[in-house]
Length: 353
Ligand code: PMP
Image (cartoon, rainbow, N blue to C red; front, side, top):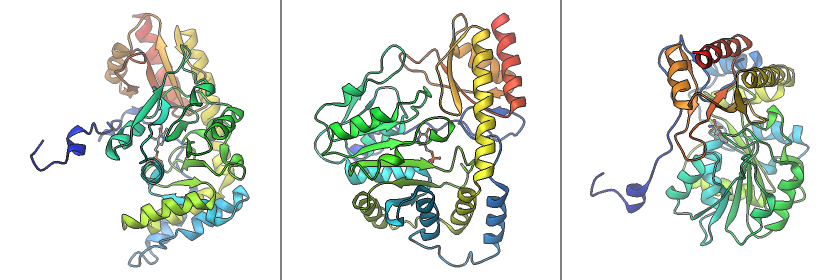
């Protein structure tokens, strides 16, 4: 703290990122990365881009990437916005749409960056309690508000909301923007992109970090009607930040087009997720039904903090959030089949001790 800080920065509780350990000999199941790596075509495109024009600025409009995404989704390029990871896209969206006087609503258990952005941009937040099973009641979103944010599937629970509920929430709040954060949608939830032509207030945000395994490249995007996309572009251009670097653009376009790699690797993750969930249940864990690439689990007898410590001692990192109601849960990312087997062996021996 210093007398030069603004009141906003003084009060800010910054987001705590998951640990990125320096050493490589750990099984890293703590930040929901995809264990299979990006499409080989993406790696090749990045390699080519390194030798080709890095002295030049990138296309500020990220046209090729936005066109590729729009073409697959059956939309025009003016419906797509690209940013440096979906975190940046979300930050620009909060800044563009939510600085009005009314509080925005999001679930009390959700991606913690939403709270941080509210503090950063002086936005009031009205948190909606989840029920005992960590589910949202769509009726709760029927209230006067300055906007809505829904992670679908939610994080860290992994629970997906049906598309009809998203549509109902967008319909019930016609005068504010409803953001659907679909960081994990490709692992089993229904995307709200199909609703975009019907709802002028819907903004769907996705990322290349999870199902396309490019977390290190920082590419995210939003899909919405052009009047919302224009607002994001105005915010971005006012920060004087280029949409994406040349390597990111090249890699993301190639990854987007490699449908086969995308499908094969996400199927592997989903199959291991379901198998791991079942095996954890057999060991006495309560596991929430997950449509994401992670599981949210608590053990009936062993506290989460002990599991966290004992797994770490065995070289396995998982995520723990010390918070009311979820303080006894671990969030476990799905690794390779071998990593899932190592996890289960470790949890099995910890719970038997
Ligand atoms: N939304 C949710 C729900 C997330 O869990 C994450 C990843 N931590 C993000 C957005 C941001 O992902 P990225 O910035 O890598 O696109």
